[in-house]
Length: 486
Length: 152
Image 1 (cartoon, rainbow over the protein chains, first blue to last red):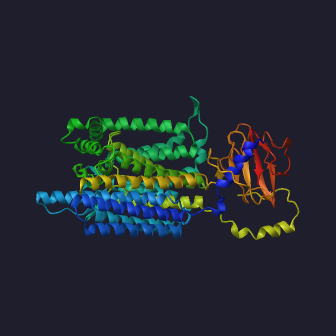
Image 2: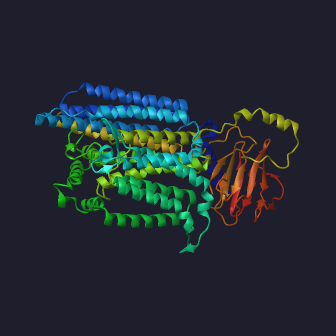
């Protein structure tokens, strides 16, 4: 062997750490969480200083509640998943915190406007969002505590699939008075509070498809005919893709929800691809997607409206194009550096705190701030995918891939819609947007990701077997065929 | 708020936000390969350290030739499976390797290589491996186009 080879080897062994002494990463997680508390508190102070010229008690409540939530989440991770990925929780925490800041900022603007118009002040959304965050935390801890090993979820695959289907179908079947808000039937509203069961259905369906594909993986990779250098799957194996496609179309027809429809189809497609490693699935899926999109465009008025608004929002500026046009103006006003927190007018966009929070942030933090937020999302997603790569069992791999990818696709769909890259679909940005169901569901999703990453990073628990080795060594001669490992 | 303070806080907040991102990315870099046990040599990243307390037992398996050159696996008590199967410890993408090609496992302080009925065979330093054979430190083990060796 040549000399450079040896020096490279020495360098590698110097810089690396061995698996058994792998740090848990909890210290760095705590550090980053404290950092995000500082960032969020600073942002709140800036918002209040710019808006009101004085600090209100709300600042204290929001800041303290945020601190308590993050610390409880950290303690829960320390207790239930000590080897979990150190970056997932801080990313989520910071995004959630920046969402709180932006929602508080829009609250202040709404209150100002109400005072100017002489109306009574509207409800403060930030307190509701904090309440939802606390509930999300409870769900997060609950999932971490109850799911001790993600592999047990595989056993409930079909149950989860059934639960997901019911949750998806429920708003579509209920009368419009309960389920319809702004033309989309995806709510269950009882009294003042409402939830969107579709957000939870997403997680159940990912669990189902991951379990199903692990069970039947061989079936889907059996060779069909070869065509253009790819192996096509057999016609009868297309069933799951057809089911997903039918499901998406049904959501589109009965619930008029473009976003969830796209999300579920994309998710199944990626899981199929991840399970079989065959490009032909992607191409077939894309063909299905294009076909479905064309048919939907021909049949449904609301899809046509969305596409027209996307192509030219300014042609119908006063009516349908108003929202997206205002969002684009907001992004343009923000420019590279933004107007500064609390110094812009993001409240001019309808639904600025939920669907269009991205443009609100863009106006006040500018391209630099938006890029930072995108990188934080990217870190969250890559850590999820990395857990998928590192975890040892196939179900965990598929589950983590599905969860991480569903977040990624949702972000793409929302931000693409807001920035007029693709037609607007009406999903919420995970953790940033105002919305209880989205926050709850995403906290449950993150708890599952942390559980999988804990399994991926924890050292193998083989230590109890160690005392047996010297005895075996002492007692036996050379063993011809070594014991087969797992 | 005065204009100057506004501008300063605006820039300061964005700088802090990016500082968070950079700290996060640093953590990503530091454990790029830690959890999987696989460790690739980062170009220019490694420091050359003196190998103090040099022992006779193998600590690492290093790929010295073939497409995966530079890959190293830290050895523990588990056997190393080599082949094209997805669950192999060292997964080869090589037409000359079999799905389950060879296994390197520990017996006491020594490591043994064993051919798992591969089509093209496993070679320890020119000699074809027919029975479990002890692998000395630094001896090349050839599997298809890949050559691996054990290092302390």
